[in-house]
Amino acid sequence: MRLLKKALAVGLASAMVFSMAGCGAGSKGTTAAPEATTAAETKKEETSAETTAEAVKDAVGGDVADKKVGISIYKFDDNFMTLYRTELQRYLTEDLGFKKENVVIQDGKGDQAEQTNQIQNFITQKYDVLILNLVQASSAPEITDMCKAAGIPVVYINREPDTQEEQRWSDDKINATYVGCDARQSGTYQGEEIFETSNKGDINGDGVVSYIMIQGDPENVDAQYRTEFSVKALTDSGMQVKELLKMRGDWDQAKAQQIAQDALTQYGDQIEVIFCNNDAMALGALQAIEAAGRTVNKDIYLVGVDALTEAVQNVIDGKQTGTVFNDHFSQARTAGDMAVKFIKGESVDNVNMVDYIKVTKDNAQEILDKLK
Image 1 (spheres, rainbow, N blue to C red):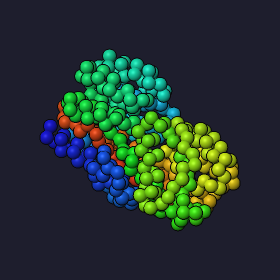
Image 2 (tube, rainbow, N blue to C red):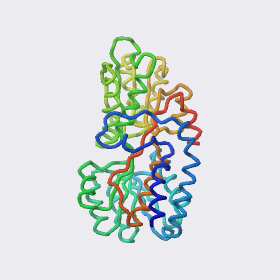
Image 3 (cartoon, rainbow, N blue to C red):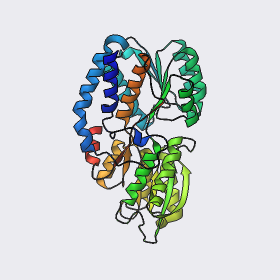
Image 4 (cartoon, rainbow, N blue to C red):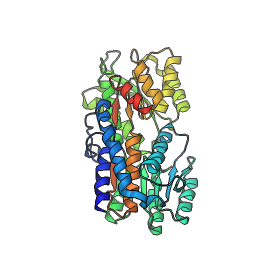
């Protein structure tokens, strides 16, 4: 047990291959984002991370091989969650030693009732631990209580329950935790990417950055924070801003394309910046920008979040001003480590944060090389 604790403790630190030195910088209550980690720095950690994964596997041995992990993803056709679940499955089976047949991943299909039924089936079949990417984060209290009654620990990922629910886990000693990134940090990085342009986002020189905001799901905390803190980063830097439009795009490329197209028709050259809560929507906005005869980084700026491969390539090619790496590698590995700790009966913090990485033209190629 002592060896396991040591291996897992080290694993949490070094498994965050793309993250910054500590989780505290992205913890709750933090409004100022720390400096971005460079891809060059993370490359130096790769060998150490691989060694640590082997140490974790050796420490766990065959103890988890027959343990069952039930995973439900809010919907499989989400670009980012596809990357996430692929790495999660790989890490659980290849690095931590779970048998492939004991790691079951199901598609919530964007339907909370469907997902809740999946979770109930996992409980009935007496799975040892659940890893859940909720359709609706507001469902966490109900689902947590279901799992608690069955004696099954749960690791929530990507979509964060509210702070009251997370505090309840700690206060009532419930075996539940959240693994994710602080969305305030990602929004801050988006705003910084605009401020770091040659004209600080003020293309027409009128002293005001005029923007449209294409939001994900307004009820989702990540969407809320990215929306708020991207703009806050500009105003905190002394810039005046003007919101021309804020509209819900549901993380969807086609919806974002239509929103951007309509906005460009309505507001024309007034739009200097398009903020998108994720890269899928940024890809849609780019299609509208190009169709309108506008040029990114010349007469309009465009930023997203997630560092999807296509979006990072667009940053390299000058078709997107910047993005923010939502580090699915580190998140997936941390989620796997938390699952093992629960299985082993070890103490787990109620919140485990991984840092984002700012992606600009300076480091985009290094990030892209890793993603490929």
